[in-house]
Image (cartoon, rainbow, N blue to C red):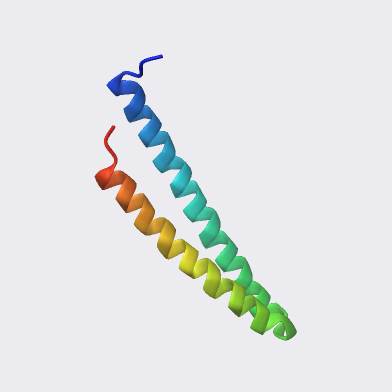
Length: 74
């Protein structure tokens, strides 16, 4: 089945929306880990390690969102 330009544009916008939701979920997870660090000092080291990993993931997601917005042909 052939896709029209409009269909591809809708797909791109939906994909960007999905990526933005994923990035927001990642940010929310970082906030939860920050709370864990404060509330449970014994888990601080593990929470900080996880937080750093999620921070790296967030930066990668942000770069990928920029790539899709600027370089994907609709």
